[in-house]
Image (cartoon, rainbow, N blue to C red):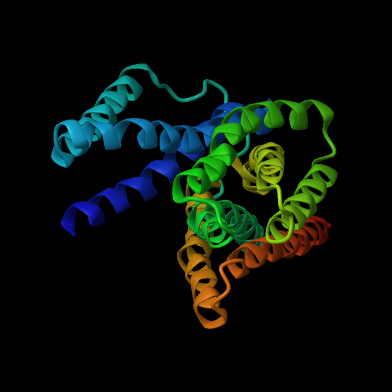
Length: 291
C-alpha cells in the first residue's frame, strides 16, 4: 500500500511537471504536435508492458518486474537531470513583462474545462480495454480473440497519435477536428454494440483517437500565462483525475444494475457527445472572458 501511494504521488508530480516542460518548450511552436508525441508515450508504455512484463514475471518473478521498472525510471531521471535545461527565451522574457503571481479565476475556469474534456476523452478510451472484451465474450467470442481484437485499438492509436497530431497542426481548424472525431468516436462506440464486425470499428477507433489528443492537451497553453503553467497544469490534472477516478466506476455500476455488458460502451459513446458541449462551453468562455 505504501509503495502504491508513493508511486501515485510520483505519477502526479511527473505528469504535471513533464506537461509543463513540453508547454514551455513548444508554446507557440507546433505545440499540438509536441503534445501528441508526448501523449503517445502512454499507450506505447502500456503496450510494451503487456508484451514484456508478464513474460518476465513468469520466467523470473513479479519482484524483478518491479525492480526493472524502477531501474528504468531512475535511468530516465538521470538522463533528464543531465541533459534537460529550461528554454532560453520564455514568453514573459520576450515580452519584458513582470511576473504576475497566481492563477486568475478565468484561467482556472478554462483549465478546469480543458481538464474535464481530457478526462472524458481518456475515460472513453479506457472503457474499451476494460469492458469491450467482456461484451465480445458475451457475444460468442473466445477470451483470447476478444482481447486480441480490443488490443487492435491500442496498437493503432500509437502511430495515430503522432500522425494525427502532425495533421492537426498542419491543417488547423482545431474545433472542426475535435467535433468530427468526438462525434465519430461516440457513434462508433455505440455502434460496436450493434455491428457484427467489431474489427472494422476497432480499426476506425484507433485512427479516430489520434488527432484530438494533441489538440486537447494544447488547450491549457491557450489560456495560461507562461508563469502560471506549473500551477495551471496542476489544476488541469486535478480536474482530469476527478473524472477518471469516478466515471469508470459509474460505467461498471450501470452494467451491474442493467446486467447488460454493452451498456458501458454506450455510456462511453455518450461521453464524447458531452465533450462536444464542454468544448462549446470552453470556447464561449474563452471569448467571453477575453472580451
